[in-house]
Length: 248
Image 1 (cartoon, rainbow, N blue to C red):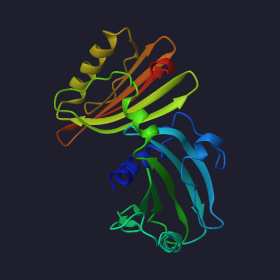
Image 2 (cartoon, rainbow, N blue to C red):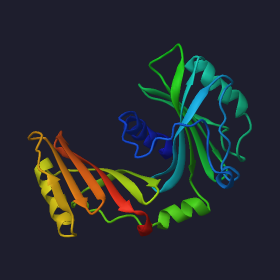
Image 3 (cartoon, rainbow, N blue to C red):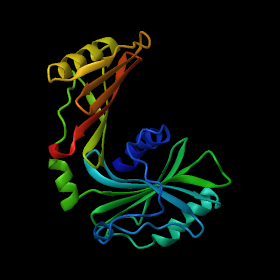
């Protein structure tokens, strides 16, 4: 269930328009990959677009679709309860359901993959949400685990909450979310020193407030940005780090 929980952060990230590449196409993917991944399964009449076909969530290759259906959330989830009656293996439930204030979730492991469906719980008339397939083991997941990611610093005591990678021709982007007990200003100074010592240049110095700060850096054609938000004695750091394709 860790994968499902991680999608909560990703959904907010998607809605803010921070996906480096938004693919507005209905269910498109390469034939070679399609043969290895489970099929997208949706109730009749559901409209879906793929919003991430090459993204790694905590180093696990993941595909994500956004969907809309005129079915109610209960009707939408009932479709999967009826379809997922056979346990994936002995001693394992056929599916698992969870709910939060914002989402109703149903998920199921299939082979090397985890399938998760989360539906907006705040709208009882129609179903809007996200469908994801994550490879939790196997050759693609193993490759992602050992892939070369750009070096990024973590102040002592930092906890990494999320790693997301997105691949584009010629360059890639790594989004990190972490938190620690240092101030926004000290986090900013730490990251500024780290990157400038590696040839990056600060683009603009535009402090937002005492508890919110930003850092924008450039190195050749690449740009990297960090946002630091201090709240309740902790600072959350969100960084979008671009790196060239050959570093993978």
